[in-house]
Image 1 (tube, rainbow, N blue to C red):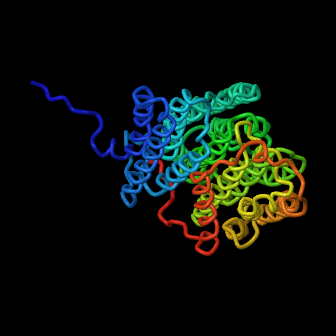
Image 2 (image 1 turned 60 degrees about the vertical axis):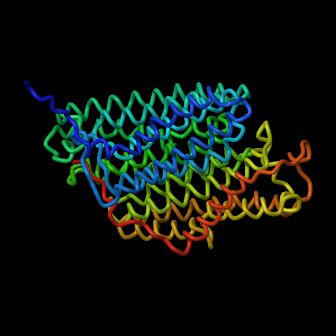
Image 3 (image 1 turned 90 degrees about the horizontal axis):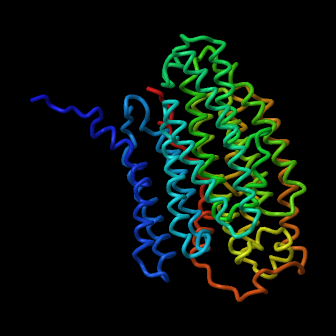
Length: 480
């Protein structure tokens, strides 16, 4: 009798274990939403989601030091994958304190299930080393976000979701066409086939350009950033916070793996020059765009454009040290950005009043602790000491100059100078005026221990990382 041989073994499934945990957890969340009493639905959904993310993070760390090429080279487990998976899980976990009022009570379970599936896509992208796996992870990440952006009651949420859907689909079309050209150049969907440099150079160049357009869109790099402020403003606050970190973690993982391990060494620097130029434009364009904003969500959207420009600048020259510094700054950005969103959440009630900049006038006199925390996070985003933003920018400057991209370092300094003015205006408003809109005056201030916990974790992390700029060394990406 013939023996049935499974195409994949236990090691393949173990490499994918963190993804599987986050993929199955939404089913548990939805089942609990049906079974628990109505009064406990929101609490149970939040608890189960947090538990799933923590378990996935622990499972992911178990694979450290055990690199493995799973599913025939379609997924790479190892240090590089684990770092980006942990960033995505961290971003999702720290977004949960803001999700206490995500949609109606009957929408919370479904919303958090979609959030988990979106996180699952980012985890898949972190280890993807095959064009098909990359596309699967990207679409899983994006499809859930289209729905999540529309969960707010305001009409602008539907507009944001539709705008994100149309523009993201267009970017995906560019990326798919680029993938088709890359497949035509090598005859394989594996990224490892690109690294051999044996295919058509014309198809490789065209395919790489179109492929990178899709990820420039996901990263909100200039000039593919126009959707970002509108979508961030219209989407519910917890989803905006989630998008600002998790989508960038997944897209940066693919970009770094493509730049470091997939492109032939002889062609890599020439093909990647447009990316470094786009990073420079983003550092300036993001900070300039933030100057005229009157909504904190839009301001943080433009800030995110500039911050990702800094991360991509660290990758210039594709040096191992630059990759480590990029990872460090990405983690620092996750904490300082989610901390800022946490303060916005503390100042908001049902209609996100805390996103209006007028709500920050006189905040230092009305709510001194919230003002102090927001000041600290804004200083971090500006890159001033004693914060992880300052340390991270110093490291990126050193990496750029060492790799021969001194002009990128100069642009980073110019962008930082502009950003200081952007954030200084808000800090001045918080402490210089005693007037302004106080959302808590319209309703009794409710205790927010969970949100304060998230803000506290972010503040401590941003401060500690300023003095201990640690980044793992075993993080070079592989494609085979």
